[in-house]
Image 1: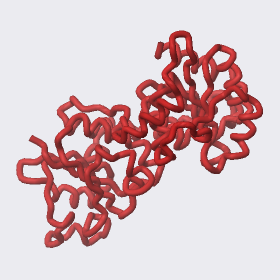
Image 2: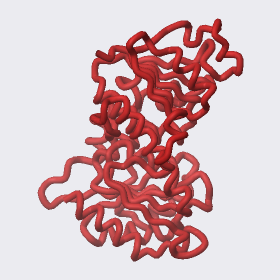
Image 3: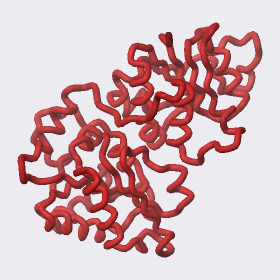
Image 4: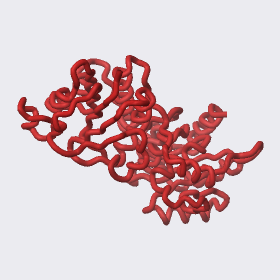
Length: 330
């Protein structure tokens, strides 16, 4: 019986941390009673920072100190990585062989070791990060485990989401999320197209729900003026749970959405992690393959199929893909 698990990574910035959430949820589902330790070998992970509340109940311990395989000499036989601790199951999610040898030393007698470093050197290793994590999870569970939407364990998160996006009564609104932002301007479908899409959503009797980051106040104001009937639940707080904010709130709200549209950026991964069927708008096929969101239902549109930049994606094509998502959820 697996009672202790070590997940070995090199660390997570916000994008890495978000894309791995369905893997973490699937791991907890497969091993509900196990103590799960997450080792960020380079010493930093958002699971100890902005996403700490998100992974509460899924990850029991964050390990960042001591020999963890990051230093070249950690591989020497007299070095005791992870403080000499061992685990029933070790899942090595990184692909460096030297570091993988260090991670392997944490396997207890009779324990199991699953290594991305080993799998990456076999044919058929997926290009997509989410598929690689799914492969590791399947190997660790004899094929029974799979990524899953993450349910926040803090009851206040669900309460806040229900208050901000109340359950629709018969004939009431269907919520459709829109996340127009992205870290790089070249990854953004034009805001004007998102606004036109929001008008189409409203005209169909559904409710457009906008998600904007803290640095996107000007875009949020433009959206308010262009589509005044749309909802802005992250900004217009009426729920009484101010402690639920940032990624935790976005992930909680995702569970209230029938579908969502987002660029290749963090908000899309948040909505996918929360369980929203997602239409992901990507610039290139290379990025679309490698960083595909781990949504339970996913539609992908790639701008380079239509032209040189994100503006080449036609509104009618996006609207048709969104309608497919909504129809599949009904």
